[in-house]
Image (tube, rainbow, N blue to C red; front, side):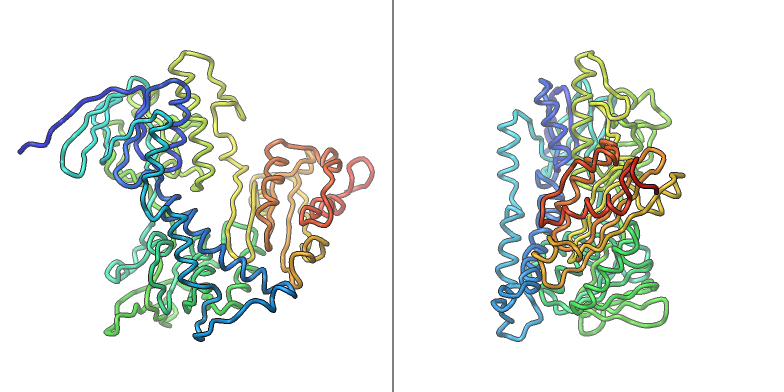
Amino acid sequence: MVPSTTHATYDVIVIGGGAVGENVADRTAQGGLLTVIVEGALVGGECSYWACMPSKSLLRSAAAVAAARRVSGAAQRVTEPADGSRATVDVAATLKRRDGMAGNWSDAGQVQWLESAGIALVRGHGRLTAVREVTVTAADGSQTVLTATHAVVLSTGSAALLPDVPGLAGVTPWTSREATSVQNVPESIAIIGGGTVGTEMATAFVALGSRVTLIARSGLLGGQEPFAGTLVTTALEQGGATVLVGVTTSAARRTDTGDVELTLDNGETVTAAEVLVATGRTPITGDLGLTLVGLEPGDWLRVDDTMLVQGESSSLAGDWLYATGDVNRRALLTHQGKYQARAAGDVIVARAAGTAVDDAPWGAHVATADHATVPQVTFTDPEVASVGLTAAGAVKAGYRVRILDHNLAALGGASTLSDSYVGKARMIVDLDREVIIGATFVGQDVTELLQSATIAIVGEVPISRLWHAVPSYPTLSEVWLRLLEAYGRPGYESH
């Protein structure tokens, strides 16, 4: 029997029903455009089921126990495992809570939301087959040809990148998906990669009782301020993890016992029950029909600030094809992808209505913040929260800067949180404009400091005005006063 083919027309077609695609669709639907999402897997995407939500659920249990152990009065009530396990959390309860946070890997709730928002859903794999046309192939082989009157948006995300290491593919390595959805915690795990995924999963699996070896060629959290990687390394080692830096994995194999043996470039070997690869991401663009618009399948997609796809065949894609989220490689973070989605959805509505497009920097229809004011958090213990430029990045960009550091442990607010607080804050000031262009915080509970820093940087709030933003005492927010004191009040003290 030949699979059936149906046809339908919408104003906007969104390929990819993750958090980013949902946000695009929500904005266009709210703007009165008939919108459909094409999704071949779970609606809600990576963040809901295999990344942000399940990973932070795993990490929260460990962070709560660690925080309690640092406060006298609570520490005495923290019990050790009766079975002699290395786990610092109740493993079964932690995994059960994680399962609930991931919706038990059912997207029924997300589909219900789509229906309530007036957004259509077509299940299957979508690819471009003509200008403003997407053909969706369902699991049973049937096809639906969708035509867009205004726009097609690619929001297909990214997947874990498997490095070209001899034998690695053959040992069936874990990616972040297997790590965050783990049901049976391995006795030992080797993690290749010292970025956010690698360090967060090392933190989680130490708490779950695994013997963890983290292999990081260039050290931990290389894109952050150097002290962030140093503090996280120390904490992981104190928790029992082995952190190997300055080495790379040159070969991998499964032993006769079923373990994975990794050979390092210094000749040493690491053996573990499982290996997790956390060395980067690759765009999911291999089978989207990109050749139709003169683009190379498998490549990242270049976009302008309104998320219009840019390419050699701009006449084909320039006025109707958009790309939001990981696929455009601007900022591989869910919150930043959703920010792009809001800009793209709103500009699609404006262009469809023929109204003015506000595409100047910081306008309503652009994602200006992607360039130099991206907030990000690594939920290790200690947490790492940063926004804007690092000191090295600011100097490289040509700014004349002053770098202010403060020991968070010296704050009254830190002493109320922990009897042994460890942390550091850094503020980077553009001396010519006297505004903040970068901030980094490392320590327990520093994530809630990040939005104030983001507002100061995006708003280009002058240092002289920040003096009037009085932090409450005793809180970690007092660090703002200490950093401003170190800088000196403009007009009163010399630099």
